[in-house]
Length: 268
Image (cartoon, rainbow, N blue to C red; front, side, top):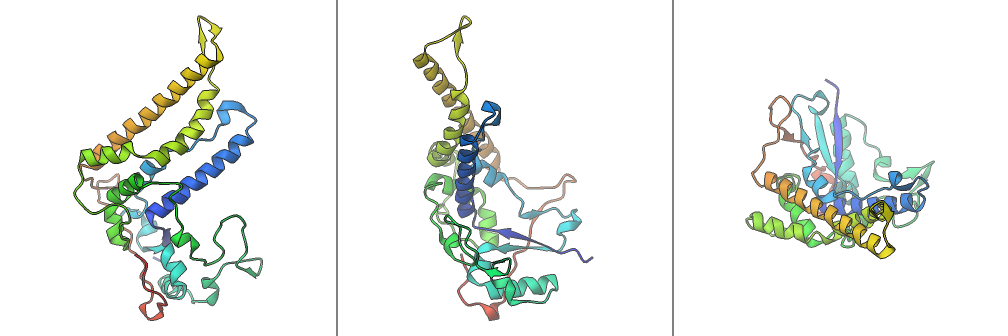
């Protein structure tokens, strides 16, 4: 009866863009330092589809671990730390302390992690522009297929205009997943460039091999788009999410920051 859980959440499109950025950085680092050949190539996966198929903010009623749990929005913790962590401490039945409102490492406040990591409770990660790692079509797709979560957790749409959507609109969005395709193709190209092409058991000329490798990459990207269309057609039916016993999943409740301690308007 004493089990309590809390789960962090971030605006889905911002989280997606940051995920693609991280995947791309890690793939480049791993591939530049790869000494094991094609078996060890690190690829960027289809993070758009992974994002909309991830319903980890929904709770299984039969899972004891989440009977008493809340979602804590990153934006609330960053913008209104006192109001958010006072409410979280109350929920967890823990004493509120000022140390909940700042980051520290080995006794030093706000350690600098280098690069463009946001320091401490900087708002940079809340308002960061992720246009380099996602585009409007990808944003519309994510917001439309997670629109129930957007409404429940208090996020406004930045890309999707709220109008009815049909198969044609979704197909048009998918055909414009230029950013996601770019990062997927960059890593899969490495794999196909390592493919050896031969004719009648003899290696072909370099330009022919390059052409075949490019065709292989093109065919792979066509398969990626095909799977997106298939998944979208299933999602368009209006799914009911259930556990393995057939019981409906429910949204994990959102932690409400203490209204008396709000320093800034709530983020939407």
